[in-house]
Image (cartoon, rainbow, N blue to C red; front, side, top):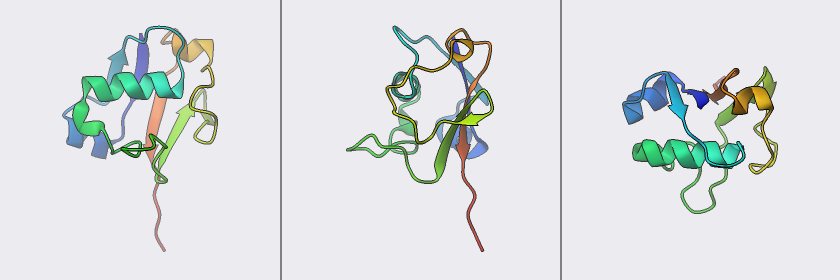
Length: 98
């Protein structure tokens, strides 16, 4: 099981708990995790990735094992510790302002 940690605004939007467990068939990648998350919580479609291109929205970041992987390929394999559920996949809403 993959563990995904959601920020408060996505929890409120989807009605999901802070930590979501997902069963991912095949290799764990950003794309496979987000596909499974959006399938389980359809209201998240378009909130994390663009509807048409499926590109990450600019104000959303992904972290695993204390590293920002937001700019990595969405099909790059994630570390085994994430695939095994030992470490979570974090989705973070970036903060901007002046």
